[in-house]
Length: 334
Image 1 (spheres, one colour):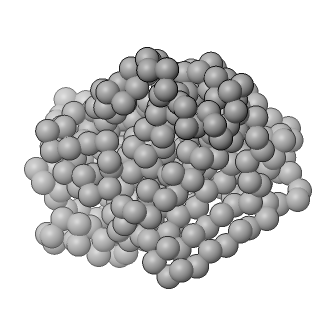
Image 2: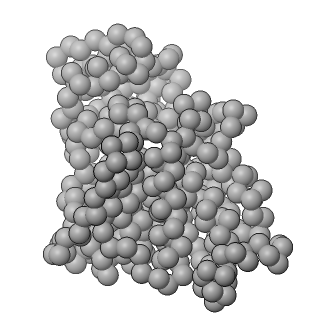
């Protein structure tokens, strides 16, 4: 390791704070547009250990905004590619790629033992699981998200700060929130939000208090908001109620017995707006979808997909359970 690698950062942080980063452990959950910016900044800053967690493979549509990947990486696990790129940037730190889907069954194991958790996800199921782990273990985390030309960021450390459920008690219902698939997303907007998240991470890792507001920027319309956190704490963080870790709300994808395909189940059942989803899916797939009563049916590539109004889905084709979960999150938004 070059003696001058961290020289410029050390001038600003001071020797003690800079050297302290070498002993820190951070989990970056999600290595899409947000995570592929957050993780490189932390790696280059010399954070001693990064666990890189993602369930997805690199797809061509990722390349517009996910800076860690190139065309030669198509079809490869994002976590593994990310670790390779970051080793090229800084071979002196410990990098652990994990190709896994965060669920209530593995969240404690995957997210325990860290000084900080960085949210690079694109769905509320994962964020509420992170929040539960933070409540249970006292681990700080940074909530970040971006859609269209805007984004939000909020550093959290319950019980020292409010938790996510102090602001949003329940996850939005499927179809109630836009996703990158329905609203699109601009790469630079994600990059700004993710860079700010990395900056707040460095504050927290070096002992400086992060900003306390939930910050929202609409870069396209030149709008910004600094929202004060709720004064009252919710019962979930004050009483350490971790409903999502106890699998009260979860999305599950499993292979169909004896058939090529996947079944997706939502618990508790939802209430999807099939008419809105039909328009979204026809734009996405450039093919017609048929709505019959409480069911919506169409094709995504070689896969025949049926969506039910209660949130369930059936996929008949070569799609894997992992990809099916990702597809459902992209399209339905939960």
